[in-house]
Amino acid sequence: MDKLSPLNLKKFRKQTGMTQKQFAESVGISTRTYRSYEDGSRGLSLEKFGQFKAELGYHQENAEELIDVHIDYLRMTFMSIRDLSHFCQTYLHCSFTEFKEFETRLLNYTRLWKRGNIWLFDFFDKIETGNYQVTLQLSGQGCREMELVLDSIDMIWQEFLQALLFDLTDSRVTRLDIAMDERYLGHDREDEQFLLSDMIAKVYKDEVSFKNIRTWNHIGGGNLRNMEEVDGSQGISLYFGSRQSNLYFNFYEKRYELAKSEQFSVEESLEIFGIWNRYELRFAQEKAQLAIEEYISGVDLAEIARGVINHEMQVYDGTNKFGAFVPDPKWQRMFGGTEPLKLRMKPEPYSIDRTIKWLMYQVANSLKLVEEADKIMETDFIKTIQENGEITDRAESILQDLQASYNLKKKEENHGIQS
Image 1 (spheres, rainbow, N blue to C red):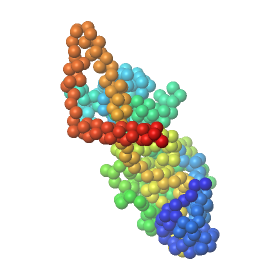
Image 2 (cartoon, rainbow, N blue to C red):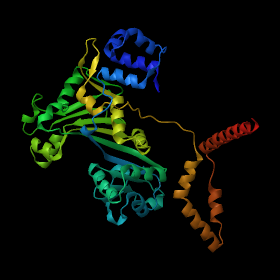
Image 3 (cartoon, rainbow, N blue to C red):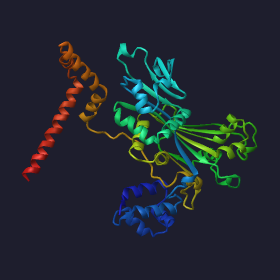
Image 4 (tube, rainbow, N blue to C red):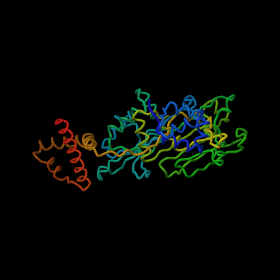
């Protein structure tokens, strides 16, 4: 059975602000027993630790029926797409003829191809400059349109993204939004829904703790005691983090936004769309890339979102008799039961495989064409291309690392044979 590190147990206890004696009493064990867990003389199973957390108010499972999770924005850049028609047919599963061409200055590109809200950016002069970079951008509506395409061929987001990232190895995810919609439970259960007006009060009372987030803001609102009576209210929006950072949270009362956009009353919006609040996570640059890498590796999208929220923030509802904050039960029902997830770079040694895959996908066909042309015209362009290349300082460093790794591998193999 897996054991919890005594250091992690001590770290968790200190985060609660309780002494060993107070913590032991809160979870229902003797102080002596607790101390034996924390000093490592007795092992603490993860199951037992989960029971401790449950005694403190942390949920071991979340109520999955409370939250709907989906991708709500995606932007990916590909460094060398020479054939947009092939790219659309093979990876977007639609014909390039369905896209309309526009001039643009967005994202420093000069040309935009639109199929509704599925957008592709490239350059007018890509042949002359040799810049074949392309960016795929899906807004919220673009994601829904992409889902219709995927549904028509019985494909899911995970498979769609796996094909893009595994086949096109020079691709990078630069923006990802994950939306988590809190379902409406019905008029007779509105007291079970989480109120963002309460979260504002909690922030001021230090009942919301943050790990890395340093700034927050809020707009909108009305009568915080009974917002539903406020005609024309746009609802509350909370922003945690900086818009310039690689991770940014936006929590807002989606029911008000839908009511305004559809010209419904809030009550009609709730009954028709069934959404109370939206909790939106915006990832940029390496955070977006790492989140997608987790997803295509098999981690559920909801688990990623909940894990990131639990790593960055925790919401409480008052304190216990020892002054330790008690987890908010409404928040726990939605986001509890998931371990915190820290998205961080995993340094890996350079692999020649990545370069070979890029050559196979992007260069091999062109080299084969030149080789056949050499035979017809009795030329030697292939040799000219090879001679034109040079080893840069970075390439020299890579080759030295490869040589060292290869020598070490051979040494280990020889040692294995001798033994």
